[in-house]
Image (cartoon, rainbow, N blue to C red; front, side):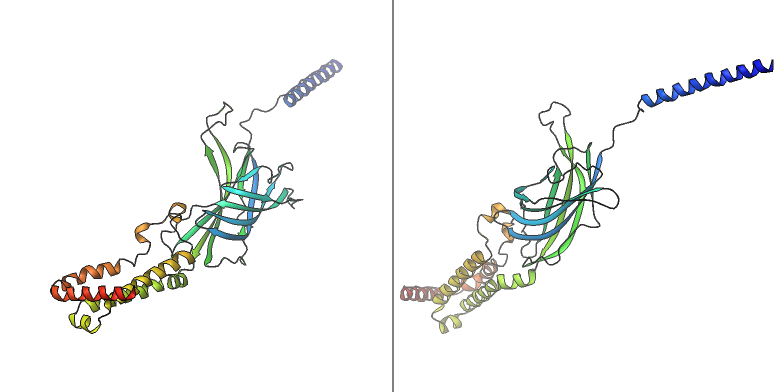
Amino acid sequence: MDYKSQYYNILSLIFLGCIFTSSASYAQDVPPVTGDKAPEVAEVGIYVTNIFDLNFPGGYFKAAFWLWSKSKNKDYAIEKEIEVIGARDIKIDNPVIMVTSDGRYYRSVKITTTINQNWDIRAYPFDVQHIKIAVESTTSDVSLLKFVPDNKSSGYDPSIALVGWVFTNMEVETYPHAYKTDWGMGSVPESAYSRFTTTITLKRSSSRIFGTAFLGFFVADVLTGTTLIVESFASTRRAIPFIGRLNMVVGALFGAVGNKYLTTYHFHPGDLKAAKIDKPNFGRGLPISAQRRSFLKPRWNHDRQERTNLLKTQCSGSCCLS
């Protein structure tokens, strides 16, 4: 009986072993049931080496920067699978490729581009501009590729010489940008692509520009006020018979200062379409003389005879100048 018992025990063990072996092989053949596949992650960073040609009438600026990505996918080529949003022209140099210490594939490219910009100069010359460099994936949506910002290594070159401006801040962020279209594929009604955005804040050097730009207007306004004060008193009008000529000189001064302001700082009527300009605030100091004129007008009505004589004097002075 002992031999039979041992024999049956050995057969039982062999049978159980066969069952476990077949179960294990079946488990290997059947793939596990999981959710959607996680998107590939690419860490993206930027280093701005130059910003130049801030063109307000044209509504654009030019920039040069290095853009890099770090990904576990060795086939991901960032220089071929992105676009710079709002770029008029773009030049991409050959990439630098290497493997990082943590085993990720690193690709870096230098980009020089011209980007559209919506300037807001309603507060000129105390305006602050926020220029944006946005890079977006073109071949893979957010279900396949996700950008992550490299905040630690991103930045800008402090030696950038942008006359009249001061760099105050730079921020990088990533987010999915949605498009309400299926791109003609007839699938989902909308899609989203990962976008990497760099925002650089520039503050205008307002104190020097304000003095040089509006000093002529201040001087002309003082002369205009002096002329109106002189005209408000009969004694001064009799003492200065050539007040009409002085008015013409002040008018010519306003015209010369305004012409220099427009030509020097490149503001012309087209700028009102290319940038946001608050028209009532443009040349805010000019209505001062009109306010003084309305204030002093009652004084002029008290002596019509003297005003008539003054008008004759001005007319004769104008004839002499002509």
